[in-house]
Length: 285
Image (cartoon, rainbow, N blue to C red):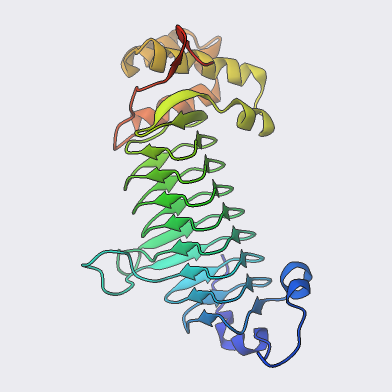
C-alpha cells in the first residue's frame, strides 16, 4: 500500500454541505477520492486514489485505506479495542484496495503499540454490522456477511466466507476457501476448503460450490474428500494421515490441496476439533 499521506489535501475531497452535488454519481461512478461532508476523518488517516467515504462515517487514528475502497454510511474505523485496559488506540489499521465496507461496520485498532496492525486485505467485502476487533487479519477476498463478529487476533485466510451472524473466539484461524454457516460460533481453528456449522462449529463437508467456482479440479475435490474422510469420519490421528499421504504420493498424497490441509492442522495453535455432523451412516462428502 502506498504510504503517501493524502490527508493533507483532504478538503479538496469534501464538497460543501450547502452545495448541490450528485452523491450517487460521485460515490458509484467517479474515479476521484470523495469524503461525504457529514463524515469525520482524522489527521493521521491516509486515503489513496479513488477512496469513497459515505455519510456519517468516523475514521480516526493511524489508518491507511487502499485505492478504490468504498465505505458506506455509518462505518467506524480506528477506535481503541473494546477493552477496559485499552483507553486509547495503540496500533494501526491497514485496509487494502477495492474493498466494500458496508453500513455500520466497525474495525478497531491494534492493541499492540507501534508495530501492531489490524489488517483488511484487498477485495474484501464486509457486510452491514460486521465487527473486526483489534489485531484481526483478513487476507484477500474474504467475505463477512451481515452481523459477523470477530474477536481479537482472529486470522481469516484468503477467499474464506463467514455467513450472517457467525462469530469467532479470539486467536482462531480460519482456513482459505472455507465457509462458516449462519449463526455458527468457532472456538478452535478451522481447516481450509471445508464447510463448518453449529455452536461450536462442526465439520459438515467440503465447500464444493466455492471450490468449483474458484477453479479447483474434480481431482482436487476428490482428494480432499479422501483426506477429510480420514480425519473427520475415520478419526485417524494426524501422524497416521501424514504417513498414509507419504505412502500414496503417486495419487492423492501429493495433491497441493491435501498438503495444505495437513500443514494447516500441523501448525494449528488453538487445535482443530474433530467434531462433525453425520447424515445417515456417513458424513456428507
